[in-house]
Length: 188
Image (cartoon, rainbow, N blue to C red):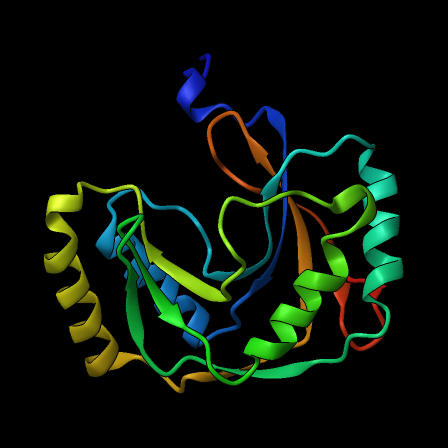
């Protein structure tokens, strides 16, 4: 059976760097994303380098990431509240503690072969819902806030690694390589 183009796992020239949110908070956020946007398959994460094309090979990009990330250490991240990017109708979780570490990582990694002129100023956050009918924004936001208050586990997590990912024609992201922040060593 041939997959439809919308479900294709064929890699495309679009890459990002993300930190996955560890469980139990990560699992909670992933399930909340699925509830807010039916069919959402993205694992909960905070983006360090937003999606971008590369004009180089994957091994060269990996080498650059390894070199530039070697001085980063694990850090605590806290998610105190939910908010909305009104301009794009995106519901997200705000990051307080750890925000400066993420900004520093973004600045250190968005150079050389990984550099990309981004549309929006980098704002560390965890996306909860996007790509839905904007007319349902308030309803979805109220549901997210209610679920967050009712059952979100501890909202502090330790971030001790990040992952270089590639998008596919079906908009499914593939993990390419992981980096341990304790030593910037290969973990995948």
